[in-house]
Length: 215
Image (spheres, rainbow, N blue to C red):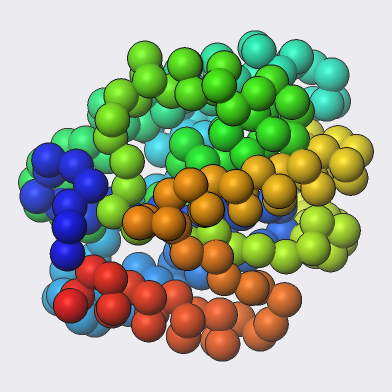
């Protein structure tokens, strides 16, 4: 396996639109990796996953869509991400742990760069300052028709629905963004169709992890 960073640990990210089941798949994948390695991976998420980052999560994900413009929104995501990396992800990788994150930088590129039309180049500028050359060892993009994904989110009990309230066209551009990201980063990105049952999806994820990270 070719490492994508200088840390001894392994960093896996799950990406995709709203309603793709990332949290469920991340949890099941963590259980599988623990069985294989005898050690539980660190399961985390963005925005959040560290002191300060969790507080920013509420600011970003709650309220009405117009609460932030796309520039402010992107800066908040990267402020949260910086703490997540500095306080959670990088220390764990330095200890040789495996880390699974429900969302990472590709979500910001897809949602803000493409979906909310800030532009990939501007997001990349902020990314370069905040994150640098660091990237995941493996990124699994969970893909579904945006309308179906949004429908799946209906009935959730939390109030983290700011993005679900945005126009469907935003989510369609976001999906196109994920496709473009995967094409440009085929060395680490794999797209998985999630318009199927949970176990079938998870089996695909486990096969990818075995082939890419255990071989």
